[in-house]
Image (cartoon, rainbow, N blue to C red):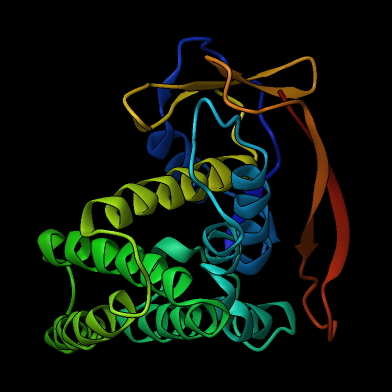
Length: 252
């Protein structure tokens, strides 16, 4: 689940690294609205679908579908929270047992859509797993869960790679695109107010800033302005289901 705390006015206009901005919202005190991971993934797919071809070339329907499905495996875990079966928790604090289950279900769904979609999502989560390993902050059981995930996905990646035509280098470049869409969508969903610097993509460094109600990318990233929305939920103790509203979104 992605936490979306009540917005606070940005006190500093200077941009910060995007992950710093995201993490600050996930650690903010007090109550927060909730954005399901699957909704965030759909928004990532919308971003990919609307990139300027000059900025991000070579995205076909299968690649965009993989991006849009990359977190769909979180659905059951997130609905446990929305139905009040466990308390709200940020995706940053989920245990390896839970997030590996969600990762695997996401890869399964993407692979069912198209081999390249499954390959991209599998490589995305393998990168995250390798980063988690390097942090060395899990229990022995968690370490073993992540090790098993990496071994299993390595075999799956070999099988999926043989079913599609892109080279290793082309696949890794598309995983970069997926991860770029992922972090931008997280930034939008968590309600961060401060401008952020984004990861390099195709040799260019981007910034995103909230201006007059619109998120503006510098340099130009989108083919044209995009209007949309995404759902947020609020859990009320003692009630069987969460309250929902839609957040309008304008991207330029």
